[in-house]
Image (tube, rainbow, N blue to C red):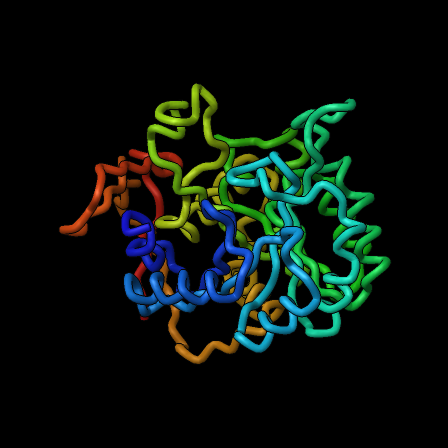
Length: 326
């Protein structure tokens, strides 16, 4: 945590939605608030929106308690599909009472929108196979605010477009970067166009995964299994501009369409509006093209660091944009 949190603002970010897939997962209000307190101690200039992990222990009463405590939402992870998701969802039907109370309390349901591999489902079709479940949840709970997290495919984008105003989706900088194409080139093109379309349904979500180098190489207790995801938070907004530049150079986007308004809305405005976060700080960032080079490794620099955790960011050693706070 101390190797990551001090660098949040370096990426042009002062509000983060904190995911709950810790070990153990955040399934109680008390745990969420304690974690929020720890984060604030490390970097008090960031606003931390807290979430709970959708788990059998979550009940409608938990939702009411969470709302009163200022918890923003609940994140759903399909069981065994991603980092620390062994306690995730097997069947959504069991949570219908929870979703009904979330709708009533005006809380957000964040969906990791993939189906587990197997029975004809592969990494290439996992998101598409989840879309019927996503659309069914929206149909059953039309006023429940739902975010389909880190979209990777054209079909996901089109599915979100068909939904009402209570549904949105996040797009990550890494998924629109030419170095990391999650599905097919046409999917990346659709994501780039959605991100620059001015449609408020689509806004930035970093999905930053600060795995230690050992986890990325399958070492220690991972027994050869490599952790998914890449670390992007210190360059969250910069990666997006890099990807937009790439899109323009490839003829997918037009530079004249990447206006200040488009950038402000995708990087922050649309997300703030959907999450209903008031911009009390009135801070702004200035992005400039200089000689900024992505750091090779991040470490816990605190004096009481218990171990030598090293985290490698996406596209290390490559040039990117510089961020200044105003």
